[in-house]
Image (cartoon, rainbow, N blue to C red; front, side, top):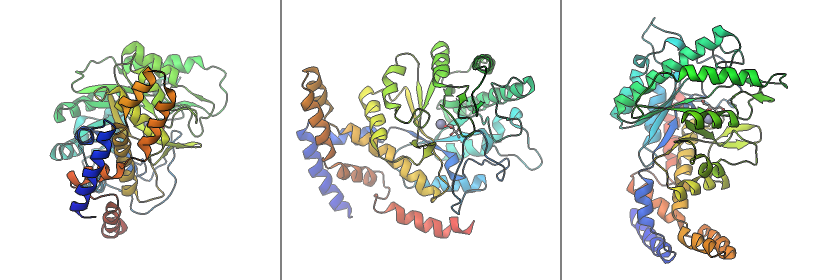
Length: 420
Ligand code: RNT
Ligand code: ZN
């Protein structure tokens, strides 16, 4: 499509939206400023650089063997550079501790990691004007035996406490270097495959371990602690130590950032409904936007009802300063670059769609108890010329339209990925 026809369609679409009291231009200005944190682990199936051929443990799994996975920091950052050329807006990169880089012969274990091991990431982020987020990696390691911070074994527990403390220091150094707070998200897979005899002890241990991990104080300008719950994992189906109630309680009591992963709840439970409640009690929220499909919590994000509901809540609450948007999924069965692009674009489309809804008409109808009108307006929004506004966003951001980015990915696949 030519620039001229994008402009013409946009102009007509703006008029239609204005009739519903919606300012499409203002929506675009807002959308471009909402950062989305891209998870580095989509590019290499959560393998990291320590031992890329080792097993992924901790109740998470990638399925598929699509060619072209990134094997080195250079390949992974190169892939991300390419992804950034296909998506509009200003973004962040979310890095796991297992993506540390070592000079030859100077490898250290996870409990001895230092900011210097992430210099490659920090320099690259700085150069590209990106923010960064971080995560301790409490899985895929010989010291993880089904338990980490909640282990009854002091040796195991202490190792992971030292690791988590190390990552908080690294996150603070990252945030300081980039001039933007780095969210350090703690997720542990600890749990039981079968019914526990004692549900209480591991939770008490986890509570105490976290207290030790979080002792050191950092400026919120540099680092923010986040904690992520989960309902179950593969091989840990009956009991997860870090359940929702556990972390909700811990986050409220200790005023930590609460992470809500869209794939970590009962299949009919959505995180969209949780935002307005949690924001009353925790200072900030980190979203792990994902798509659960049956037992898997990590399919590529697409525009579906769940995603739209999350976006609607974000827009209606207008708490973008308190809610960090991150993506968290991994699909090794399709082109990994496409998986990233589809997910980021889906998140942005959902946000834009939510911003273009006739929310004033809907809330007015609700206030006057006219629920038929409220429902009718939600349906009207669905047939409005949304695509014309989305195309304009891509055009303004100088990135390919939805009809064109895929071709660029195919070319990259032929020239770069297929040679790996
Ligand atoms: C796992 C959690 C966690 C991980 C990443 C790799 O179920 O969602 O966030 O996906 O830490
Ligand atoms: Zn997650």
